[in-house]
Amino acid sequence: MGGRRRGIFEKRGCKGLALLEELWSRPEQHGAVVTHGNLLSLLIREYEPSFGYEEWTKLSNPDVYVLERQRPDAGLSTIRRIWTD
Image (cartoon, rainbow, N blue to C red):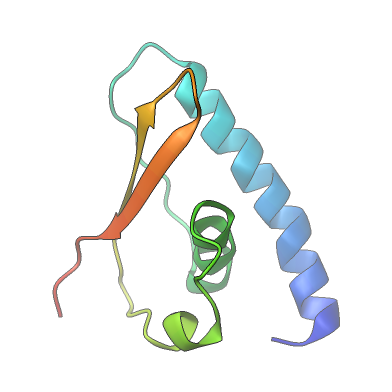
């Protein structure tokens, strides 16, 4: 992804991260976020730094990932793909 486009997506990604933080603070036990592949890849990378270009090329349309916060007090999270091709 080009530098200029990546910058735009990173700005949007910051809003996405703020949305996730808001969801973490709510009393509900589950939530859903729907987005496109480029923003999804940036959000995944925040929680899984090894997610890169190779993984991005393997995203399908649609694709579904589950992000779970295991210990809210420590901020530890896991992310896993649940979509089957």
